[in-house]
Length: 488
Ligand code: BES
Ligand code: MG
Ligand code: ZN
Image (cartoon, rainbow, N blue to C red; front, side, top):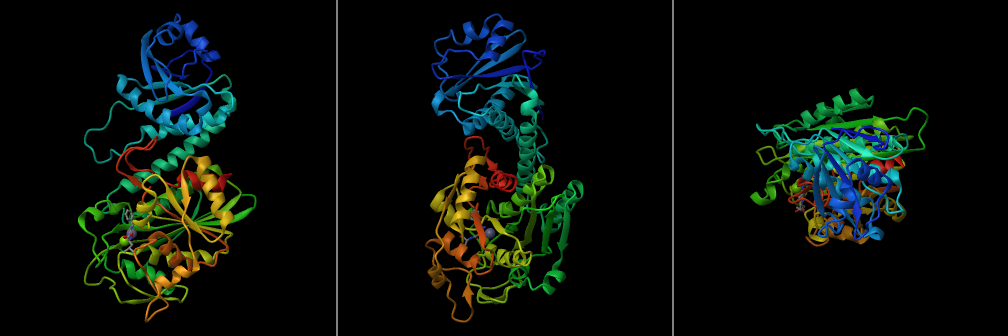
């Protein structure tokens, strides 16, 4: 889908559908709307605002045919309550409406400022919203959607001012689509080996450095906790280390780590069917950080970024790791396996130790780690935990700016009590209660980073019904937040 900015007062209007926004009970026309009204014989003043039943309520739509095109009026709601998140939701929902209106290919957007917003942000969110709204994963459908919108025009009097912002939205949207595609792929396709190949292609296409470690290399590097998780599977475990280096020196160094369980059956502590159903998505953390690398290779921030993902399958078999096994993690600490389904933290433990050796200023891990975070925060809020209050707050703010909600859960030192083992330094699970916090406390044993945050996306990575601008299924959770954090 092509997206660009265009001045409708200067150029021909080629769009099949023109989407134009109205505030609730506000009959004043913007400059662009006045232009459209003149061009199309008063269609806006007479056929839209003159109609009693269109009130401009948030997300209300009303379509009027005119000169072989359609004008789709959309309600922006109360002027004083309008914001960037609403722009994105409107764009995502109206582009879907437009698809269904008839065989439309080109859509123009005119969403007027409420007087206190930045036009750049409006354009950014129209572009990102349309990309998010148009997304679907149809690779395995024999019948593809033929009603796709091919072109989005954002109407504004000064295209040159908005074009760079729209480019940034396109890069972010592309990264999200890449992440979603990878999450939707079946586990039989997206194996550790396949994801390593995808990462290698991404690296060579975008000028990133990559190193993929195989099982023997990982054995020599003492990734024992990680390798234990993968040992029951016929799929070889792999670890990806991608690196972005800015051209003119780095103001800081960041490591982003993604949980990469390509399928989580639970292992010998096998999951019941309903819980196993979506476990191909247990590599959403990996897919997230890969998408982020794709975007930053194009946005080129002056930050050095390391992306790490330890990829494997958690399967039951004769060679699986067992409860009661004692693992010696990469950093030398010993872990008694209490539950083979608490595998993510074991893989992350060694990945966190690896990140420590890179001497970075910040470490961020993203993981579908606990069912407990869903109980606590549901499917629309990501749990954030960490060891530096200021850093946690900063990431929450970055999320807000980017349009994603995070909420902090506590990590206390005395939660280590919960992880006590009789025969090893710790065990990999504690009591059921405060499960997300205890998991984070477990992870904290494996990082010495001064600034570390853990983002638990178990609830937010894959949703079973649409929410605002997000479609059902993979959401690319935390891609926007991390891009924002790294490029701000
Ligand atoms: N991958 C799961 C967590 C998960 C649950 C992700 C639901 C997405 C949706 C993780 O590996 C897991 O199985 N966690 C266990 C931990 C428990 C055994 C301590 C859980 O949360 O039940
Ligand atoms: Mg598990
Ligand atoms: Zn898991």
